[in-house]
Length: 146
Image (cartoon, rainbow, N blue to C red; front, top):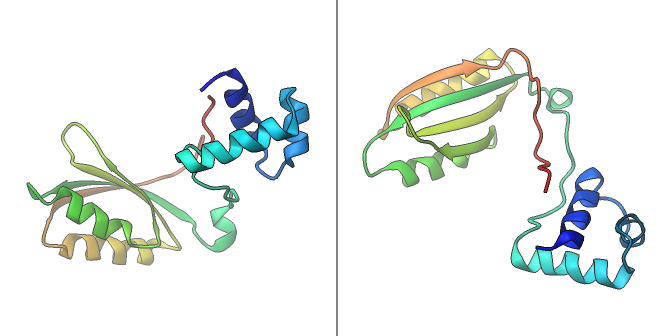
């Protein structure tokens, strides 16, 4: 990845709806070069899609939870895949340390969270969990500087 590639990604990070012409002007390159590189990024899996950044509270998702899980030995991937199928789950991570996995999920209310936790704990491979409710979001950003 060269300097022009990084400039193109930065321009798209600011606003993925920019036209190829706008991106080319911003990065001081030709429209053809920008189109070629963006297509190359997509084919290589560098760009995995262009998605809107949604205010989840506008859709009734008022609670964010970070859930630490201890999962039965040898069942990590299988269990994580099952948990990831739930639409409320935004992320499932393998982690180092005391816990095996962290789940980030969004809920409408405490009852929705409660139901999710009970479903998690009923899974035969989830040995233990600790749930943290987010009180305040200081920063939540998917765009990473490159």
